[in-house]
Length: 137
Image (cartoon, rainbow, N blue to C red; front, side, top):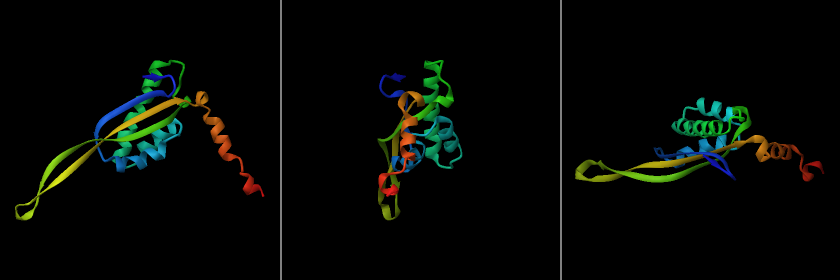
């Protein structure tokens, strides 16, 4: 689906995985070109990498099917959100007739991909390569 401001989006909901564990994986691929992000996610052993990889591929598929002029090399991962979902509450039986509550956390992953040339990604990467004034002094 195409948002006029924010590119092509894919949302995966109710995934069993703690958002606390999945967010560091999302931070690794945010603002990267699509082929590079996919290769990083495929080579990571984390469960979160597999979940994010599926969502990134879905967002890219949405972009490529909607706009036939796009190529995979033209896309980059613009935004990734990992939000809290509901929690499954399970009884965890303990010794001496006691019981604890086990929470199985869920998350919602939102990925937005966009065209690299349209968004000005090249200008931001050039700006980061310029030396600062303090470094020049």
